[in-house]
Length: 274
Image (tube, rainbow, N blue to C red; front, side):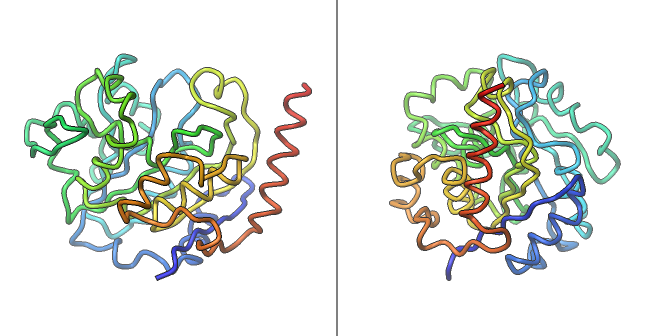
């Protein structure tokens, strides 16, 4: 089956844009059921920075799973604070069905091997639960959708995995049984990572969505000027057979890939002149 990635542009209406993107990739009827709870892993390193999916995009993801009995917005502790502290960014979405979940507080775990370490992963990360990864569109060679998986490790001292990052992230990907839906939030495009990225961002109002997380990562990287064929994370994922990272073999639907790439290049060029 050919991996498909949808690219849509929007003007503040994330709900209809995500709905359009899901339609372009064939919808998610098999994921949106009364029998399966949903875990949405938001990527937020520092709740005081801006480099995370917007409330409107996460709300759109939540609404796409209108049949799910329970939706967990998940994060874990790090040295910037607890998972629950950082999840407060999306507190307006919380209700009886949509709940914040700190992976670091879960005592019901199963042991998995991550980069040769035995780690206790939260029970909500197991199938049949649906797993969604959402992060921002950014020019960071270590990834976004896949880099988000480092937050599945419950202890706060995750930096020890940076020397073996690709292995750790892909071990985590395999441990959860795959990412079922990847949503790159391109409301803004961030040019780098960390504090630099927060300071240098460009409004792009774009969503990238797909069922193959490796393909979404590759297309997102290429759009911001990176070369997926030179990114160890994507290449190792392909070697493991986890998804398609070759841009020429990915079916990109919706907005023109080349047009968007050029648009973002021009916007970045203009922002650097300011």
